[in-house]
Amino acid sequence: MRGLFIAIYILVYSSAFAQATLTLDSVIALAVDHHPQLLAAEKELEEQVALKKGSFSLPDPQILLEAPTGDFFTPGIQQTFDNPLVYIQQSKVGKQQVALAEAGISVSKSEVIRQVSIAYTQLQYAETTVRQYFIRDSIFNALYIATNKRHAAGDAGLLEKTSAQAQAQETALLLTQAMAELYSAKQQLALLTGLDTSAISVTELIRFPGADDYLRTNWLEQPLAVRPPSSNPFTDYAMQNSGLANQRLKLAKAKTAPGFSLGYMNQDDKTSAIPQRFQFGLSVPLWFWTHSSRIKAAKANVEKTNYESALVMQNFNSAWLDATTAYQKHLLSLEYYENTGLHQSETILDAANRSYAAGEVGYIEYLFALSQAFGIKASYYETLKNYNTSIIELNYLNGD
Image (cartoon, rainbow, N blue to C red; front, side):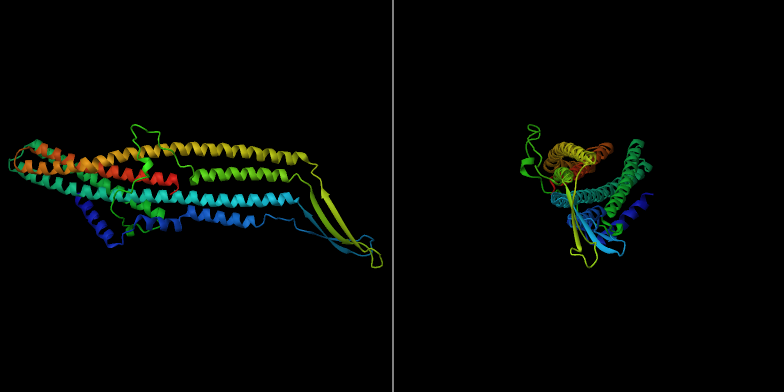
């Protein structure tokens, strides 16, 4: 089984290196061009732009045929109009709907970029983890083979043999799990981008550029000093939705104003001195309950969207606080590993090899030292992944 996974590893990476490496920016650009969520948001904008052109919506004219004297039919036409205030408010509603659709594109784009960036980072981490466990598996398996031969020759005890075997088997299991996670990460990125899984090769996991300087406050002393941005796609969308609700309320009120109608009929015979007949009408909003119920519903919608905007702002502030806290926490951990932890790992690994070769430490101590050194590196890469993810989250919330 172990040999099978090593063969799969070699096959996967020999194939991956043969492919062109995709950067994060190129993957994001591909997803933005093809992601269904963004395509749907763009179609929503097209729909609202088309609807806005019909803001000045007139009812279809009525073509009439009447026989006023009973001797012949005569044609006529009648056209009704809403109050001009209605058309003005309808145009403003159309503009608000277009603006809301544009804000929706910004929200969708931010969400797609966030998903792709996280999936890309997860794939970077999965590939790094597989490489690390492959190295560990090779080392511990070689040690187990050597210890097994020494045990057969009577130079190693049962404890030494069993410890080596346990360490080799555990590392092989971790390599198997890492390969499964790598496959899952590839599939996730493929789903978001439409790429063929076999064609996905990503860059090495490295540290993202840090957040703005104002995020580098002393987290332990001033955790509340960091303030969220005043404008971002999510709060902008909520505010735009509230503006649309207010505009619809104005439209409902405008529809209580009287409308008009104009008509023309030729109702007499050719010998009549006044053969043409024009008509002018005025619609009176007598059915007040219809208008009052619509206005009441529009007012309720305004209040609802105001509460929704407040909820969006509350949730955003909470998410921003969580994101900045996570960023500062992972930043502290990452700086520890970069300044101290990785150097200690190399020192432990070098000292363990020298001491074991010189017979200064036993096999159990040697295995423990190797595990500790590899564990520090594994923690570093996990911290690096978490740090990069926190940067992605901050950029997402900030609308960058």
